Length: 327
Image 1 (tube, one colour):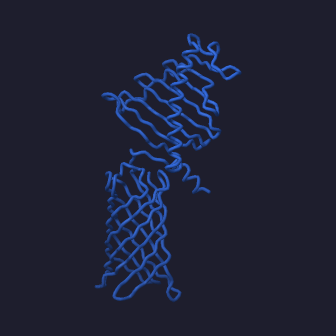
Image 2 (image 1 turned 30 degrees about the vertical axis):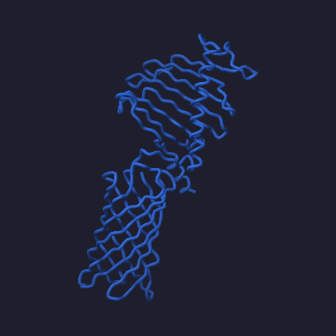
Image 3 (image 1 turned 90 degrees about the vertical axis):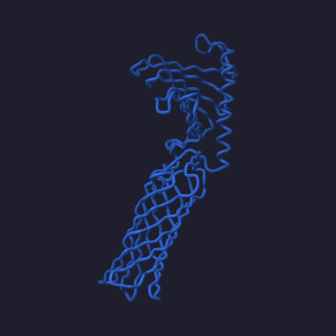
């Protein structure tokens, strides 16, 4: 159950689906996520005057499990101080039913607050039920604009369901800094015509991505079996250099292949006898994306070991499959 919740939390993280420049320096960024508290589908758009400046306008659409939408619009000054917040609610038929507006002082405290119903009992707009200075015509014109905006949000969410589960849908602007891999592993060794198979093993690695394609990290594995009631253990502690193929800025890919090289220490223990030596090799990996941060990872490696005191080169073929996590 803990693993299921971990996956849900990872998949609920905001995913960038649009990131573009407006005018000379302005930016518009849109993200999607699932609220882990109530399951609401959330689409957030942020506008900035400069790429690293404060958010001047933030528009958030939320769709509840009951099918009702809420739209929140927040305005801020050039310094980032919130000035106004407008909340519009829609019924299950996507009709605009209420508007709530709050104004703030410079210190962030609330200056004024008001909430109005926009429709009468017959479901029609009533100009007498809205803010001062608003006419029924103004409400109807804004309602048409909100309908268009809601339709674009709704159609995009419907489309994402057919592409993949909405909380795991991804845009094309994404990059991960770290990769974790934890897996079951099988090992076959060969030296001077003698072969040994290790059906029981564990494999783990950590990679820090120094660029879009290149990562550096640590790889460790341990395999064990029993021969004549004596335990035989083969383990590796290796440095890893990894190259990831394809467009790493595009997280919409289902399969993510990589090539890696390994070098470090190989160890063996049989009863009271121990041995170690320099180990080196390489292999390939292939990750199958489950959602934003979760992958099913597979890896196949060839590792050679030159044990101290032995002229023979020990060959090892390692195959692993398990969970890959990208953060």
